[in-house]
Image (tube, rainbow, N blue to C red; front, side, top):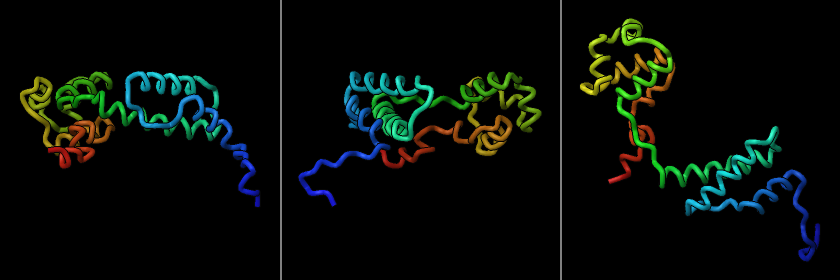
Length: 153
């Protein structure tokens, strides 16, 4: 057992991690300047051909810190049913008529959703999610998905 006065050398697996922490400590991000520095550090790591397990761990934690800051200070607004449906139709390079046939949703209803005159029902969301092979959550407001609506008032 080493004496308390002896300095313990970190294990080899942590060397790269501790170097990164020395360059940019893993602390909550509280300003745009720190956010920019964190993103620059993330980009420098992503530009590498291969990351060690320690570097991958550092990148994972730093990414979480950036996400926490951005969710609070740069929230992405929800999109409407029509905007999401238009996006999915465009991405699949399909037509309203093809979507209607494949999902058994009337083409007139799809048109009304796209124009913002109607919202999708739960059944329609399920049918569309299956057709486009996405989670039904893409059609739901973020508050409904993460439960934050219940805690905010």
